[in-house]
Length: 337
Image (cartoon, rainbow, N blue to C red; front, side, top):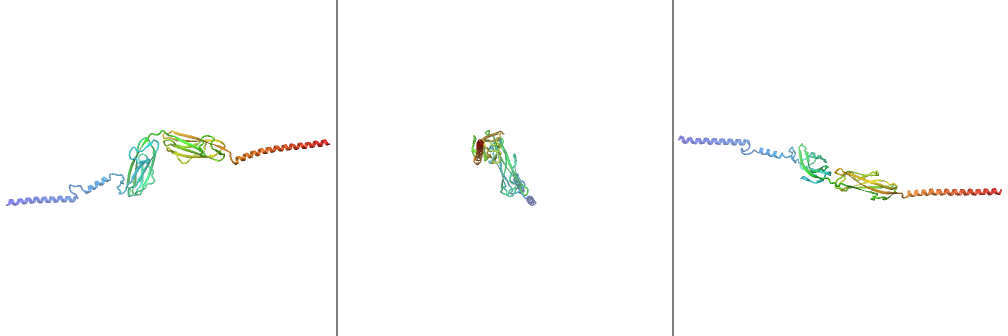
């Protein structure tokens, strides 16, 4: 009897202890807020936030929701994100365009655009409302070989957080073309009077000279100067010293016509990308004549002087004749006596 009764008691005690230990484990798990075999939700959320904050492009570094900005850069009108980009002759002008857009929902202030090689970039403003864009520019001259530069933009929110973006662009600088040339064509009162005598122009009237200068080469020319060998002031339609390939510039000068054969020469000079001075010249002529009333008056004055001299001669002859007659009368009277 004793043996039969003691065995169930031992089994009951073991079962009770098992239940107690299970309850303890459940209590511990509940107090930690997670299962012993699963990561906590807090840990998962924290890891996700850290991953999201690892990139700074298009998002403010302070994590401001809705702050975003973009920049699109082009080289001579081409969106040359990849190599090699457009080919540009060495020494020719290069223009970089940076289009900046506030793509976020928050106004951005203190916007600054820079270029890693070209330095500061000129922009029309420093503030962009949400969805607003602006175009910034930088210029330079092409150098030989592949060229890459990166445009960057940063804007600041009212809370002081930043939004950033960047974009690269490329070009390839080709060898300078040796075909640099220029031509000047000069005319007098609309006539291309390269040879004498040219048009007849009344003395004292205004003479108009026109100088058409054309870049007949394949390179951009700098330091353009147009002059006249007679020292008249030459004025050009555009206030520029640069002439692109195929471009024509019209200049003019004026003066007062002088008597006789007249010649003056139009001169032009410019500098090629290889620093060579390119020149050309063209002469023009006119013949200054005396026409109209003034010239007739001079002839009349000359005629009057001749007539006056003739009249003086006639009077002298008449006086001499009268004196002779008087002498004859005197002689006759003396004979009578």
